[in-house]
Image (cartoon, rainbow over all chains, first blue to last red; front, side, top):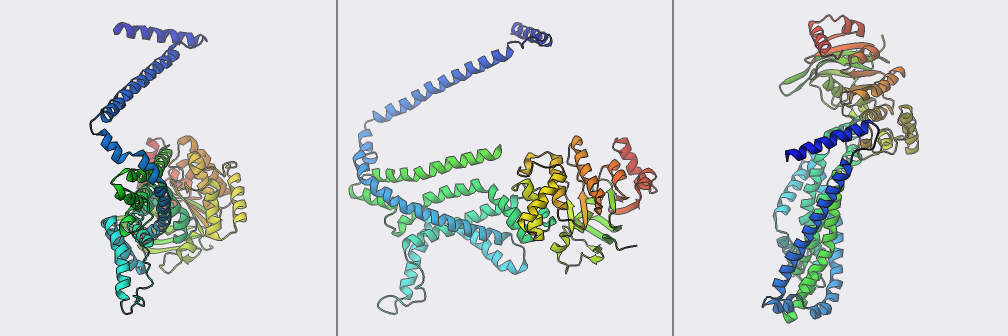
Length: 309
Length: 249
């Protein structure tokens, strides 16, 4: 050990003298690079071997276990998959539309609620109070409960108030929509709007107060300072957490299946499953949700990484 | 004598129990540069922030061109449009380019049409040695360049007076000169200025008068030669002696 250190010190001194006399640097740099490459290659080898070993072992274990054929028939049935998947895929288009429309509504609602909550004017106090109550309540209620409540409650209200005549119409709530897709989207908007409002609010608070002051100092009004200086920075800083909420929403669109929306991917898979107790269609639907959420998640990772730089 | 551009009369300001300004009287006249010196926490920054109405004073009055600006009925935005405040930490808008940082105040704050505002901003940026940086993010500039952008931003609307709050304190020593040159430029243009500073040499050179603040009171105000070379108040003497010992005077 000691001997080796002496040797190195010797090399370094030698290298030093070489440089000062104008000759090329010693070989230390090359040695280090070679050693690093050796280590890298060894690490790669070890991780490959271990991966093959672990995955291969698990696969063998599963595929040779006595129940595998039953599992495969029930969950990974290729024939059932090819038969049911086209319908599920078609139904998934509704999920996408609900997701997109609800997302836009959520972004707007969340922003309005957040701006209301951070407002300071005394005249706005009641609105501030309402915004605070809204976020508290709708963040605290399970989304599934809210979808159920709105999806069944509103049509019940419309029909019970319209019982005065035989067509069940003419009641004071007739203007309310009863389409379960609309009501489901509305329930999702209410629920996620509360989360997104809090995300925005955190973003607004994270902008340094010097930014508002600088905006005022160059002659902007409070409103202009918010619109041109504070808000753009707040929205930028909350991009990743917002995207995170998008991912959660994309999955939760499946909840509208419980209020009788037909032609939605999860519902479609349920129906297909019910006919012959084969669960492959559900996995087909799961694949579709993943096909959207995984790219979104990777996007989020890249966005987050980009910001640290 | 003509009406001072900025006048403070018996201005007091406390943050909770802490009295930051204890009855300030000061006049800054047209084309005059007044430097405020004093230890950290002596009230220099607070005074400037009170003049730009970013902090509310407790008592007394502040006048701009003879009009009181500290009454609650006064439109604060129109007052700030007549003043230019430069911050110690630059406070540039990081989401906007250098050019947009300057344009925002001219265009939105002073309703100058966009093309005109942009042209004005470009000219001024070039004048202060920032040509070619117009489209950069402010974060890519050196501290000295950032502070010069902040100076241009505040000066672009030709305010009646400029308030400079320790504009070199956040800078590496080798960048200080750049910014001081820019301030000297303003002085040469005849801009009325109130300058809170730690740079005694600079105060001596640029200021027409120097005021020494000690625990929220203006202990001594006078020409730089008098206040800095031959101070009368014992507090000023002590402060300058300590600076001298620290090698900063």
